[in-house]
Picture 1: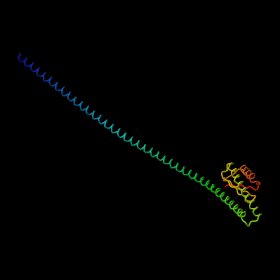
Picture 2 (picture 1 turned 90 degrees about the horizontal axis):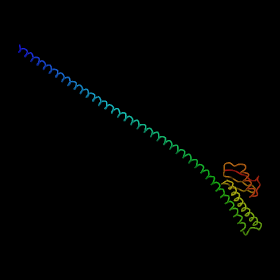
Picture 3 (picture 1 turned 90 degrees about the vertical axis):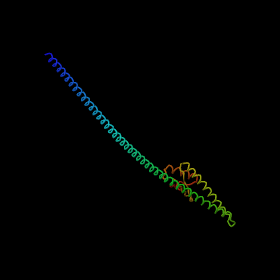
Length: 228
């Protein structure tokens, strides 16, 4: 009877040990599986994070590249527009300068032509008076001339010199009135004067007539004024 109880106790002990060993084994396997799953989940999460980071970097790179391209295009367009505006402005400036230059050249040419006319006309007039004086001097110096001819020649020379002096005085006085160019021609009692302007006012006509009438002892109705 004692032997049976002893054997029964040993069996219980062995069963208990087996049960303990089985429980420990199950617990260990469960922990390993949990650790593996956890590690796999962590690794999977890491891979997803890396994938997310890679995608984010790639997207950012594309965005930066696109933005840079857009900025470059915008900058290029701005430069092109600026250059176009500058070229247009330069072209307009060149056209404006050319037009101004053309107008200035036209005015200068017109002014030069007027100046040339008055200078040339005065030279021709003075040459005519010089030739007339020279002719009368030949009469004075000729031994074949009569006394009456010499007296007449002397009077004509004096008359020409008086006319030249009167013309010079009148043209200078007219210049003081603001008329830069003028020329006077005398033909007997008729006196013609040309003023270098396009239009002349009535009061200016009166001023010129008054000067010529006073200095050349001429009648107003014999004074003829023209413009050029």
